[in-house]
Amino acid sequence: MDTPQPTEPDPGDDGHPIPRWVKGFIIAAVAAVVLVVVVLAIGSGGHGPSRHLPGGDQKTTDTPEGHTPPVDHG
Amino acid sequence: MPPALRKAALAVHLTVSVGWIGGVVAYLALGLWAVNTTDDQSIRAAWAAMDTIGWYAIVPLASAALGTGLLMALGTRWGLFRHYWVIISLILTLIALVVLLLHMPDVTATADFAANASGDQLAALGGDLAHPAIGLALLLVVQTLNLYKPKGLTHYGRRRQRQ
Image (cartoon, rainbow over all chains, first blue to last red; front, top):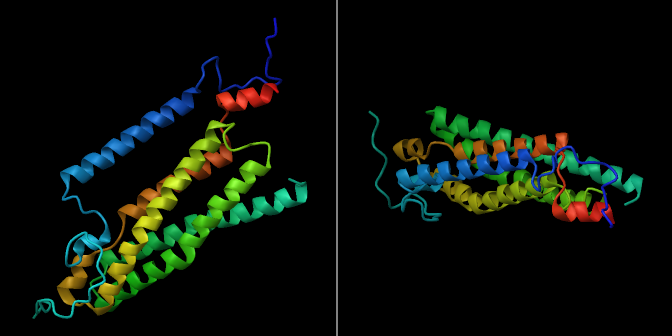
């Protein structure tokens, strides 16, 4: 019976198809993605710097001419 | 890949990859500056510099890092799909590059707006901290993976090893 063996055993293999560090990494990555989604869902939805521009998170290159003049700081 | 070419490709890959991290750190510093300063000119300057660094340093370095990384993987014994660390590095690099390319037009729009805004409009812009901070964390994970190269062959890698 042909049972080919790797010439150099893989220490990360441990007889499992996927190494433990990869499983841990995937769990951490999924948790991070869920956290980001929850934070975005709880927030207003806008997250980029353009959320502060007139028109919210929409892409705009409008200049402030024509907008309300800035508040006088006195 | 011949050893001399492999070394040259590795040198370029290391240079652009570390340069990418450096560019993001500089961008993050400018973002912090934009958040903390109250001077209009400083906020305008910070956004203009973030726009310039983003398009002329970070994007080219990120693209070069991906390109040379693919070259190193495909041209050496590591391969692209044989080791889990290579696959994870590739996925994280792709995520970072795609988010960067989607995010940069926002930065340009904000820099254009900041160039002509003043007072409360400028103060409301704040900085850009989340994207560079998360991006930097991703890049540090990739760097750590590439440095330690944790063991773990994929099914494809095991099959290739037996051949």
